[in-house]
Length: 315
Image (cartoon, rainbow, N blue to C red):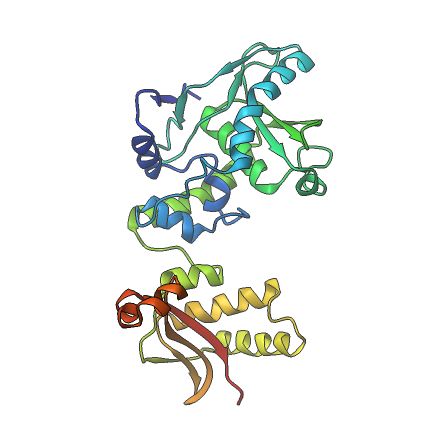
């Protein structure tokens, strides 16, 4: 593979850098793009890449701040522990054949008999890491595994290392080797997502949160249930009867039903109401003291919030 195109990150303002990320899938985006991120769905990432919402600002997050502070110490330990050298990477690296695929690497491994490699440093809390980090490459959180293979695909390097500091006092290291079959599958799924970005056609709704983002309010329309949606309604009713209304399977079924309903407020079968998802509005005011002191002005200083309430209807 030819050397990847390098786009110099230095000299760009933070706003310019964030805006530039809309033009590609980065390593930290990869798991969300393929539907395997614990933090973000494909639809939520699509909203960001199409410029409809701004990515969350994590600069003030304590875990992120400490992760950045501890990265240098973790890199120093890796060099000493492995008797090798790391070099900072100040570039956004772009896949030579797939310009929508890019990454920013924490460090490059530059003095190893296996040739150049990539190095990523992570920090994790004790409880969060208890079941997440085991032994071997396959025993890391799925989104980290995808992130590493995304970077290997972009750079063309054959190997990489993920170093993890757990609870500030336990070090674990995971070696990754490039896997052509896995890489082809990953690129194919990322490309499928990117086509949604290019066409501005949203990806499938996967969660209830996605549905609420896409259809925040309802109209007075009703929609008929298909056989597949009827199966979902019956399955959801069974789970609710078992007291499992809030489990993962129920959430998935509600999302499926909501996606079918769209902005309609009623789901029916032969005219019989199965579910409703209606807009409800409520007026709220931030200070009860202001109401007591200025009752005449209270109505002028209310904030109106609008939400849609999903309900199952008994036959």
